Image (tube, rainbow, N blue to C red; front, side, top):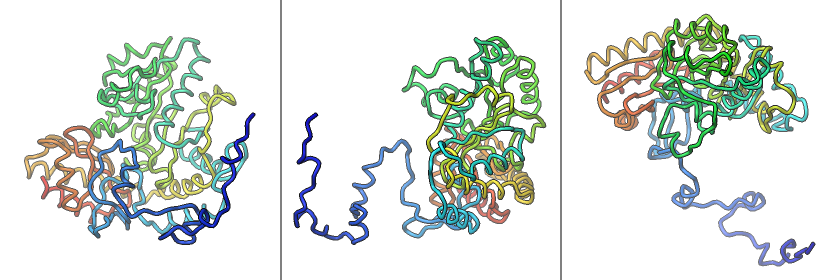
Length: 423
């Protein structure tokens, strides 16, 4: 082995250790060299999103502010993440308290926040066990693994994962195979095998859900990216009966529609049934990256040590904050407000559609709505942003509305007024 001493030792000369011009002592000690060239810093990011112009610098309540001081009413919520809005005092206090404790020690060692969070989720849900990860896509990928691991204890060849037309389950290879967006899928073929998409009707699903080969059926109770389509309760109950009969795991993807957004803590509660596996993410930790997979005992017993893992999932910092968020989103008064205001909001959207003649359909529940408009949704989103309202798309012609769950009826009305003017 050759040791290159000159490469390993820094020359302790005055020139090498001279202060860097324009850099504070603290920044120099940390090795941080600031730059005032915004164009160069922006160029360093690999952009996979088309971002709106301007820079968001702070938030307060349900409003965001850009670097120029312009105020925006936020009906995006970080794409259903910021359920408690911005600068919420309780969430800020929880973040500070968590920062005073451990941030990370890895899952090789026990810490108390994750078990306490898991116990709270189990207490409030159908589940017996919880696995924590870092995102919604990871939660769904893990759910696919857990479903296959369990299915092979039933019949060795059971492995197929079935998703529904209009689904969006993530952008990793397995979740992308279960996502019904040709533009997302085509550049990355071949995708993971054994995963397919079926039409949203019982006849087609009964044909593909083979008792000998199908491991799981995954669905979103409300298809978010697929146009905010609320699945029919009778249809979902029929699927639950079919999957039980054929011993196929039913997976509910509640990454966007879960944790209060539909007016119940979990969206499955609206159907009067229980899944075998449930995935959560987006709002669970108040903006910190976290996902969760909730499973029954039957599924959990099939999972052996080493079958799955995570470096950061369920870390003490993020789990502490998530427990605070879960307790807040479980508040019956908050959930009742989402149900009542959401029903009112939907009626107002329908009235706007009638008055403007620019809306072809209104769909949604709670604080999750989509409106199909005449023309392209992007134009409405851009015009609304100029007028001080943040919205997003859910397909070419659907404008999606995802207000923070703490948005009052007066604030909802303010957003509706801007939306109507834009339309």
